[in-house]
Length: 342
Image (tube, rainbow, N blue to C red):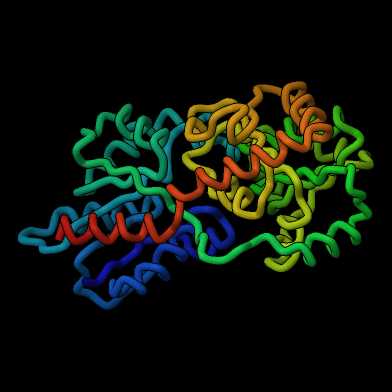
């Protein structure tokens, strides 16, 4: 079986969740004996699996869909939604009304849709697609190796000047309004006894939504003694910070899944998340803590800092939830879907 992943603007997406997930899935599918290209040019293919909903993707999907007597199938992953597009880039809120007919048309060219979470599926259903052509398959993460490394943690925390009583709270994502770096910063300012780091690429302020508003928070962070925006960092540095961290604070206003959250749990970070439907697979007080605003998030951090038993419980229970997101499970489900469709 041959599969072609369609990932338009591939170079521009390097480092994004969509790009990383596509590359990871393509690589792992090879272990199942499924030849997988990314933007391949060696047909025939049995499956064309679209990862992006850009105009060139729509045009290509339209052409592929219209071919008569075709033997291949078209699959699309529902990464792109109107909800996820809002509050991201310049003019995104002014043109989001046009996305409804656009995405409806784009996804209509698929023989089958893959939703990356139950929440993502509810959005696709809201767009009018029948549940019989939608399957939830997590993008998944690799759980085959133990990511926690005591030596890396010790050295990283020493370099950061952190003592045992000081938490390192991190978040990972682009510095855009949808990801809520403002909420993260406000939480840091309300929690001065702990260290906060936002790891993620800066985009030119002229290209993102609500840039004047966000600029204020970037300035606040620069003046703060306990809050830092790192910008883009190397893979090795990221691994060190994952290990050094105690809490992953995920306050994003909108997500379709949130792979960074899964990664953080694999490193033993305690998840504190926004009370949002996309995180319904986590339960407040059992395997995470949920909040709605900086006061909630700050209170949770202070509570955890003096409650070792709660820390241990949340780490242990949140790790159990990762089993449903094992990439091997995702690959098996994807391979089964391909086989069933072809």
